[in-house]
Image 1 (cartoon, rainbow over the protein chains, first blue to last red):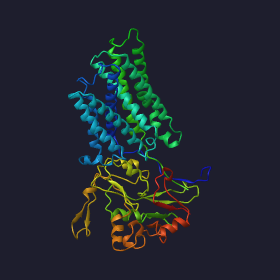
Image 2: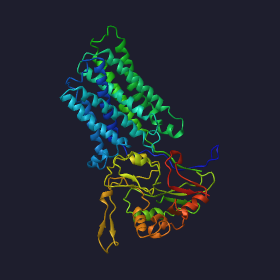
Image 3: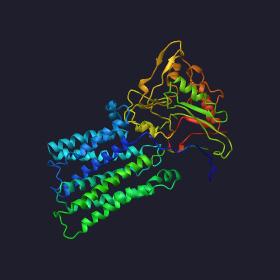
Image 4: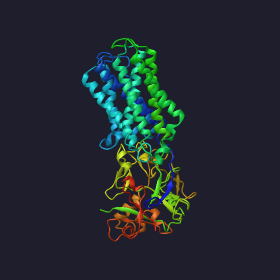
Length: 293
Length: 213
């Protein structure tokens, strides 16, 4: 009995959800990273015209739609009746899965067409769809009312920041592998993504002091999770990017150490992956069912 | 238009599981899933020292979280408040399973084969392949309710038109009826007793009421 005289009888204890597994995680990782990559590439193109010009065919121009498509492909393993996929568009008014599917269905062809026949309108359409995809994924998880650690209002923002961080990491990795001249703007964008994602992540972990939330997110605060997500995924790239930024002689077109850039990118991708795996698989505990009277 | 609801009198429930068993049998509930479950609170968990047997299923919420997340509109709510699933539309994505705070939904992966007429009499198997890989849950015995109404029967009063769990409850702990009918037993029970609903704080407005004392 609590202070207000309310009797609370626990009937069903929290259980780990088993409905969404690795395929769903893969979709969230690949979709977020693909969409984030496209958004940040577009942004970089605007800031540093020519560096990542999406209006020009590039070897990585197809990377984002391929990643997003692979994410959706993974979902066909999770959904037991994937051949009924055409019905997924029926509830765009309310369902975030419908909206995610719609965003993906617009993004993939728009990005591919933009790669084949570069046109600003296609690029803008793909950017809008990529943004929609990232937002939708966060809301899909947030709307899972039965899962304590998912049904928190910060979840859409977390998926956005995580997708941007993963996408930013991918941008840095691709730039390093392609030995593109790295611009200061790109490093700054990477830094912003890392700092933003780390801030949102810490905010999420401290979102609620309620016992069910603390218990559900306990696994995310264990040493292995902290090392993978916070240290490797955020602190390491943060330091590496700062090193790139403060290195004397860096200007808009100076070639930067590609190994450091690649490592930063890789670490950011690992951080984003670790977040999604942690949220979906480790923190996915259902809500306690109790009789309160 | 009716507003179907269920009232469960916890003072009467003895935890015999008849409701669950008849539900499983009549609805051919596939193996590994359950539409109705019985939870034993035990004595320690209840500060009153009262041991509660609580039978649970879909709560047929007025604001069902499962409905808004369903991407295919397979889950729908009828004007009379019953939340049902169109198996033809469901893709088995599981979003509704994770949206339902009552753990009332499941996606079966294997079928239940029932021999009609009993073993040895007639080997006609009754299978429901359309229910494999899609979400299933309690539907307040919708076919019985609708069939009864079409025959002029009154669900909750006439056994043929009443959900099986209610009809076969040996303790008469389960009641079903129309909350908008001033003569219905469910309205009277809700009005005259102290009732509680599960997870009310989530704003789902469930249609299943529990009488405590």
